[in-house]
Image (cartoon, rainbow, N blue to C red):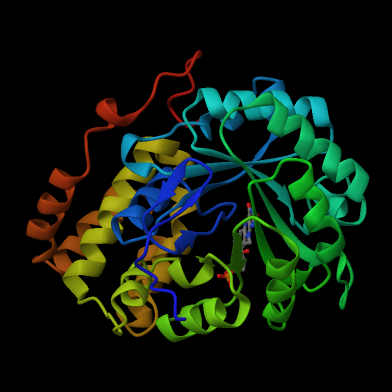
Length: 352
Ligand SMILES: Cc1cc2nc3c(=O)[nH]c(=O)nc-3n(C[C@H](O)[C@H](O)[C@H](O)COP(=O)(O)O)c2cc1C
């Protein structure tokens, strides 16, 4: 039977309105990205990975990742680390900040993370991985999810060994990105492994990797029996991809829509990260939003060279004046920052 991408499902008590999950992506999944993802139909959104050591030490920038807006729910905050007790403490902070799920990263292939014994390394240390999940699940009352890769080396099937053990240890759902850590983002995601994992565990599985269109989303769901698909790179600078998947039609925005969404995204990012950090952060988004034939390459090159977000915004609105009215309408749908930011025990505002 074909699963409707617009049908609701749940992870424990957390109700999720659609079968699309917006992927956690370091350097991408800021609050503006997540809120936009929800607006365009993602049923669940995720923060980027947050260091449990950073939370433990009260690092100001790390704590800033725990800001959650009212219109993001349901939302998972992802943590990474290798010490069960420190992960449990981080999970309690994540729950206190208002997250609906605590997600654990056992997939990050980046050396800076794996050399500390965290991320993908844990795929091949199933006992330690299970101890982490058990400590985290014991520390919070919200459901715990785990995001995995297939294993460390190409061809590895470690996820099929470790996955069921993590569910026994208390994971309420697993997300599988069936590439090896060695593969990084090359080659294809092998969703035959996702299908095998679905057979092995009694909890919903989310399939991540290469979901770029309604056809792909449907095919992955049908082939794997997963409860939902996760969308990552296809949504970078392209929230319309989510809507197109849900409505099953190719949805290309016009220039006014692109500029209105980008400017809103810029304004929110500046508020979240501060002017200076946002300037660097936003550069990649200019290429993503304005590329793909939407605007000429020369314009993109001009935009990335402008020194401030304010100048980029002025130039974009000059190019697409019709975006102003759309932007006003969008800003009315997005609640004021003061209304949506939950209180945290210490001051973390201002970007850091
Ligand atoms: C720039 C970037 C950053 C990522 N950061 C994270 C992360 O912080 N945590 C995580 O679990 N996965 C991370 N991923 C992996 C994605 O969540 C996803 O599993 C992967 O990109 C495959 O999905 P896609 O083909 O839809 O992009 C990242 C991927 C990219 C491209």
